[in-house]
Amino acid sequence: GAGVSQSPSNKVTEKGKDVELRCDPISGHTALYWYRQRLGQGLEFLIYFQGNSAPDKSGLPSDRFSAERTGESVSTLTIQRTQQEDSAVYLCASSLSWSSGNTIYFGEGSWLTVV
Amino acid sequence: KQEVTQIPAALSVPEGENLVLNCSFTDSAIYNLQWFRQDPGKGLTSLLLIQSSQREQTSGRLNASLDKSSGRSTLYIAASQPGDSATYLCAVKGGNKLVFGAGTILRVKS
Image (cartoon, rainbow over all chains, first blue to last red; front, side, top):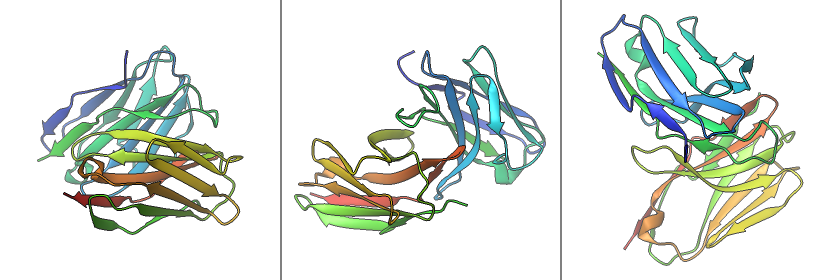
């Protein structure tokens, strides 16, 4: 596609429910990143994929968070048993590879509100 | 652990002024540094990417410099316009992470 696409763009869920956030990276981009941004705060690194592998999962806040990527394309970030502190915008980005020379392109984010 | 700091946190200037945004980082072992802008309710737009071997990059009215040894980068915006109003973020890439600063909120008044 022309850019990084994320869905849903907005999600309101009840505390305790599970949510899935989807990211479609730019076609051909092997590196994919997930970030979280709480209201008024900076970007918090969650996880990145090189191909379908995630070399570093240390940014995931708790075991309620998981992510996967298939076909070196679509990625899904799953949050189980959502809590109110999970409310944030979840940003996905992709780049041609993890290589130093590649610009990173962001989607417009999935805005999650847990009530 | 890499830490990225941006100064000032917020800046308000009249239209036409030249301005400088500052970014500092604690670990100089970086692959590159990238400047982004973020508009309210939107994702991030890449502005400039500087490789660790480079000292500056220019795009239109924007110029970014990098001094890796001292852990500093500056983003220079010439002849600022109201459309430049946004949050400007710098991010450094090293190891397995891309670490962001908290951003500078810029408001250019017409």
